[in-house]
Every structure is written in structure tokens, then in C-alpha cells.
Image 1 (cartoon, one colour):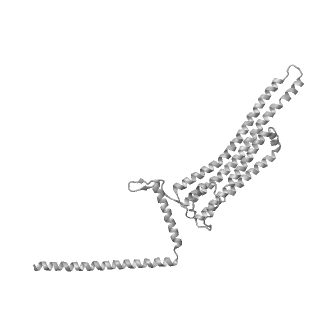
Image 2 (tube, helix red, strand yellow):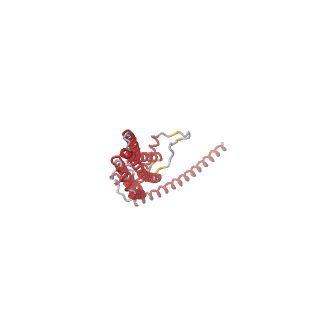
Image 3 (cartoon, one colour):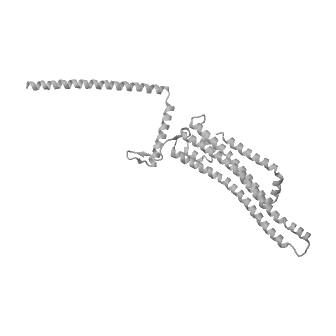
Length: 327
């Protein structure tokens, strides 16, 4: 699973492009940021937290991948000491899988229903981990709209106060113009708050949306490769078992009991295969030959006994016929 580095590089390149674009328009961004220092600063702080969280989400897959690779090596008999998997820290996403397999890493085998249940549980955990990122994206949009309405409200109030404060009876046009120009400073400041907060909120949601998309694609790629590997260790079977001529469904208890019996037989086979040496194989071969010879001798003796019995029956039949003729 070497795909993780690809998504990390893509996210880093995207952030680099955004930073280069921000450097080119730095004077305009500075003026917009100073229009409302506290609100825009809050938006940028939340954006920074969302960026860090997106990278943490993708980097967190390293532990999941390492644990899964260890499980794959143990399941195919790799050079991993027994108990190594259980000694490692339990993964967050693959926690249900660790609980399900228990100590069966070396002989992992799942049913179709178990695999589907496991994948659904992991998918639900992945969706839950992405809820925070989605909330942060919505929060940035909300703060941008909040700044917009806040600025528009300040603009309307300032315009009203400016118009109400004009003294039209003085007759001095220059003084009236200067008074009007001074009164428009507050509405312009409100418009600056409205547009700057919208700019930072929507731009932040756009940046964080791309990072969330990349993070979701990385998780989906991980889930797809996990499903492909689990398919190789899954026993094919129908969703409901049937038994007998009437095709009656077998209960879940019987189905689980059959799976447990199959696992026990498989474990017994592995144990017997590990305990048989060359001498034992030789004894089993000699025993097989002796049983075959004994079976051949028994068959030959049975044929001789049947032939002898047939001769006695013929002799008895002839004797009875001769006695009948004499009488």
C-alpha cells in the first residue's frame, strides 16, 4: 500500500500553489485582513486547524497499514514471531478486525457475512472521522456569511447615521461635502468587513474542501485494498444456508457451529502436519501396506471359503438325489 505518499504529495503541492498565489496578492490580502482583524483572524485560525487535521487523518493511515501488513505476513506464514500482532498498539480503524480475528492471524479465514460486516464497520468509522473536517468546512462558510451580514448591518446603520447627521441648512457646499465624506468612512468600513470575511471564509472552505477530498480518497483507497485482500481469505457461501430436500434454512447457530467445526478441523490438520516426521511417515506407509495385504488375504480367503461351501452344497444335493432314487 504505497498510495499514501501520493496523496500526501498532492496535498502538499496544492498548499504550495495556494501559498504562492497568496504571496502575489499579499498587499490586497493584507488590506482585506485588516478590515476586521478579529473575525478574519478567527477564520484563518480555523483554516489552519482544518489543514493540520486533514494531514493528521492521512498520516494516521500509516499505523493502520503497518498493522495490516503485519497481519498479512502472519496469515501467509511470513517471518513474524507469534504474538507480534497482539503486542502492537491496536489500530483505530481496524479495531473491530483485531477483535474479530483474535489469535487466528496465522490461519485467518472469514465468511462472506463476516467480511461484509467488518467492512461496513470500518467504513462507518471512516465516515465518522471525516465528520469533523466537513463541520470545519461548513464553519468557514458560516463565518464568511456571518461577516457579510455583520458588515452589511454596520453599513446600513452607518449610512443612516450619516444621512441623519447632515446639516443641510448651512448652505456651505464645501462643508457639506466634507461632512458627507467623513460620514462615509463608517459605511465603507462595514463593506470592507462584509467582503473580506466572505473572501477568507469561502477561500478557506475551498482549500479545506480539496484537502478533505484527498483525505477521503486516501481512506477509500485503503478500504478498497483491504476489501481485495479480505476477499482472498474469505470462504464463499450464501447469505443463508439450506439443508435437506425441502431447502429449509439452517439456523444461525448451526451455521456458526459449522464454521467453528471447520476451523477446528483446519487447526487439527495443521497441528498433525507439523507433528509428522519422516519416521512417522514410514510407519504410516508400512501400516498402509500391511492393511492392503491383509485386505487382499481376507478377500482371497473369502473366495476360497465360498468355493468350498459351494462344493459341499453340490455334494449334499447329489446325495439327497441318490437317496430319493433308491427309495
